[in-house]
Image (cartoon, rainbow, N blue to C red):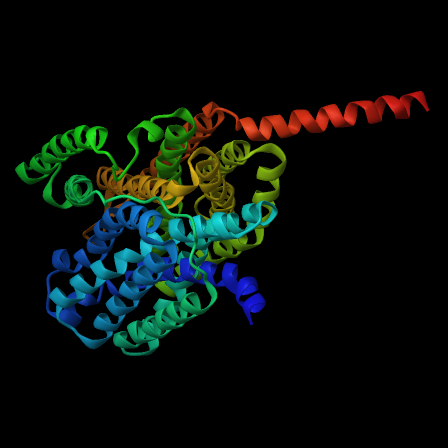
Length: 481
């Protein structure tokens, strides 16, 4: 039985990662109908997405640090439990206030991936860690690709509460499997939890992400947005000083400032931006009415099916990315992934009218994302001590989240300034979408440059030199023979 649990640990953790991504996307098909179903305004309903974004961003580094200190399995089960309770609350109510609070609880699931990656490092032999981490990283795209069409089908053919009952059952299944199959990691970093640092980071991130996500709605020059951004700068500056002085800081800033850690974090932010542009713009473009001259007028279900090949590709190519990282190093894999994303956007710019070209371009972007996302945690694992893997990967995931939030705001700003009237309704023009693709592709190229600037892993370089030294006498012997 113990051997069976060990064999199933990786699939169970991957299932948890897929659930996390599914929970984040299932509400999307509901958004147009929720004002009618709940009696709330459209702006209030949008908080069902914003609440999950904010709580996930805040809790990911906090729970990662808690996992390093108090046990990764324990915190992982807590995150999955909060996710499941949040889904259950959504299934039981139509009160928008409770729904928003429940979605905030579900944001805790964002910590599942960094915690799982840290567990894999602690529990698996080195030869299995790379492929397992690559699979874990790809679950973000797999879950998002699966969640959208499945949720749309349920919403179209059943009561909307059924969707949350289904996710509650899946969450309970994932929680039970994790409790049974995942062992507690013995690697701990003792000390007192930095509560002050956690509160400071939470306040700063809430101001930042709230300002970025609501800028298009409230107005970028409105007093509320400017006040939030100024507050973010002040709070994070004070937090930085506090972290430098703390004996056991929430985030080890000295470690984070090293190029082998800082550059992967920067690359994560840029890759998150580039990745999110693909799914965000594609979903809007294919659903645009045919009267625009470029839109396909697809339903949300058909849109999810268009994005599905990308998710399948991420699942199939995660072992390939792991082999590239093992042979050439994860920074090369990251650079290749970012370059592939940029190439995918070149295809999107060349033709965004034919459905098959749209699917091909979107799938190529997903392929690059697979390589990039699988390499990022490997870079972090090689650059930080074993006792800080969950917190460091939590910060890396946080940077991806910030990149996605900034991408959403940037794309919205571009599309708002490039519209035309169709039937009296302002609709983004094709030129606006192409500009958004160009912007995301350019960011992907910057991510590629950041990846190439990451210092080579000394251990990997030493291993390759040793292999060359071992191979040289053998080659000379063959030549002599």
